[in-house]
Length: 252
Length: 341
Ligand SMILES: Nc1ncnc2c1ncn2[C@@H]1O[C@H](COP(=O)(O)OP(=O)(O)OP(=O)(O)O)[C@@H](O)[C@H]1O
Ligand SMILES: [Mg+2]
Image (tube, rainbow over the protein chains, first blue to last red):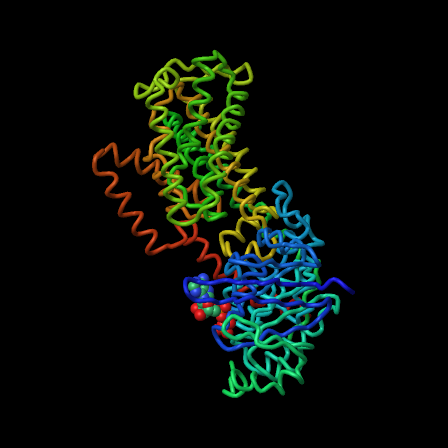
């Protein structure tokens, strides 16, 4: 396929005097599994915020399937197929997991404005939500309120909410953040099992996971792309070793 | 890992949650008791029903969408003045059409203000709603020719209801009318909170930041519920104007906005019945206590408010629900096992 799924052109953003994104040019082809790595504070989350429209860039543009989406609001970008998850849980504490995912399904179907019919009439949406949760092996307590769920389940729910939007491109901001190591591998297996037509860009600190699940890696340092390449190229790159691997950087 | 429940039972669980319960029938039947138990207090009962409707309209935006409004009386007053002016200036006193027109005017006012209000959250939002309320009050105060200003709007004539029943001094017709409008609006509100739209509102209340990230047009959801709430508040105001045949500036006062907020918080937000129970307790207490000592009654309301928000953060109804939830949680624990079997 010729048109890449996601392109950023000369993307730049400063918070005051701090340049968190500096002339970032990224091209992610369809169906790719990209990892975005870099030390703490490198501007990885900010880059996702810019792509999804949560913050506006000072300069530059974002192209989705060749179409400039820079002027679109975040919800409109999701409707075009660009969805993210959050590094720090952004869930609905008093909704059950099933209700939350059902809500996301209904929003995608544009039936969330219907106020004259009761929810049980939307059985297909509820069943789809349930199927999404089960595809992530969420388990049985889909009807428990979110705030009572164990942290690992909450991380799964983060991803389930994103999947319910039927993304073409999925941006995962440290999906396994705070999850024990054995569980995080399991979580990444679920991500790897996603349909191959979904393009995935994920942020992850654990190098083992990055090398296992990414086809290509982008290294971001101090807001700028340091280098991009295959896992083999990245692990051999002396600059990357110096700023990142050399320190033996590991995250929980 | 337990075996996942088959989807059909999940739909059934959604249906179970929105089922009409026996206790609801009992509560609504209780609303009929004043006809027999307090036939001399039907005017008060009618005021309570009107206030309960006003509280439900506030609950829709506060309890479900998380919009804290300090100027909700703006729409109550718009409805009251619309119904009043229809009769006094245009000579149209037919109550049902008057009610609908008042709802329409309040709804238009609600939609226009929602264009500003729904862009903001937190303190800014509270101040904007307050500002709109105060402005409207002042406009009504100075538009003497239209509203009667501080003297109030006199000379409203409400025609016979359905061409049959005219208002009586005891308030039989007034209370019947107020109760019917309350019940009809309650059914609409109940349907809204159990709909996909209601779920979206809860989503905004629970996490406004996440909503756009699942593709939700939060702004338009908020404008919609704000408009619907304004319509209901306007209808409550219209019923007051029509049944008392006067409108005073008080319908637009900050006091009224603050009172309804207090009632709703006392009763419990986000459960429709909370606002109604809050209205009953508040109005009965005011009627009783202000008879004993008019100046002192707000002291007790203040104390009650502090007690409720510190001891029962989810209001009186929330406190009651917690007791019942204990049983419910016990059932929930058993459920997965029962399903897997
Ligand atoms: N809204 C903001 N206002 C001011 N500074 C910000 C804002 N958001 C982020 N920053 C700063 O920008 C820098 C990059 O932050 P960002 O969250 O993008 O880093 P990150 O690469 O995701 O780091 P981590 O690995 O810790 O998640 C940090 O120094 C952060 O303090
Ligand atoms: Mg980050």
